[in-house]
Length: 339
Image 1 (cartoon, rainbow, N blue to C red):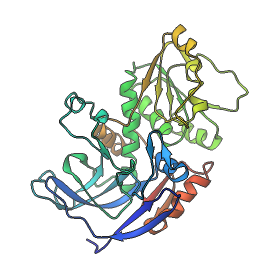
Image 2 (image 1 turned 90 degrees about the horizontal axis):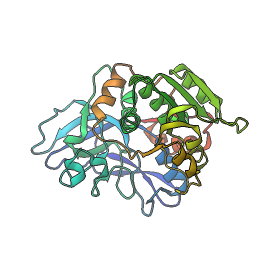
Image 3 (image 1 turned 90 degrees about the vertical axis):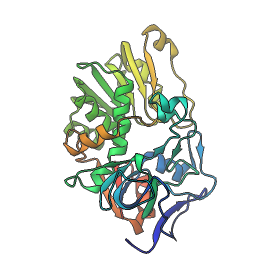
Image 4 (image 1 turned 60 degrees about the vertical axis):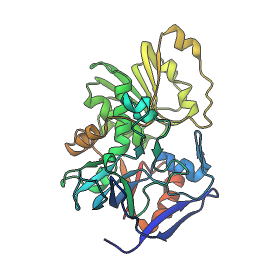
């Protein structure tokens, strides 16, 4: 164990600074994790660039990050699920465990949830972190820490598949071929999806989608009027412009799954298509009860990270990693920061 805890703080003026703090001590039921790898999520970039995402706003300095893996180095009183040296991945949404939503298994809807990196709650861009042992999952020695950091975004994709009540053999359309889109593509195929179509602005991302199992790719250049092409439409781009097209893309009786957060929150949509086609419009908020599945699908290579992780930075260059992710979207899919 080291002697200092480096922490990356983001303030409301887009400043990222690395500061030293004391290593925390785990409380009752907690484990102390030495962080090994963090992915920069699209939400982290939004907070960095815009100061907000949806209803979450950066008002005071906080630690971003929630796609993380590491090693248990100490256990607090009453924590007995893990031993020192256990390699783990963190599920970052800490629910109360007592409310109606927790009791029915939809703990992602818990009104008291503390989600790491949702301002003002500190996240995982640090060297050491204490967390309730129930939100830690083991990873095999064969799995690299950087691949393990992809388990959290894959959990989003698997939860979206579950929310869609997918029927094997259906055609899926993934709008957006960023990290969540590429993982949703693979989760869709792994769950029995038949034909997968990926749509994106960037040809580089679409070529990676093709390598990861897309049966068809479409460049969203606005030249083609695309309609009625999928049984399930997944929006993963976080674009209000993309969201506005979803009902048109769906076949009659189909399902539209909103994963991304549209910029500005408000979208002008043709509700007539929703009604006439009798579509189901389904929201996805993070995930619930899928982390173990996500960990196993990454570990057994059912879902691959090949081509998704595009850049790697050491922790002391974390501010540079954020700047790169913001300024080079055409060259970037997922940036990993290694402690």
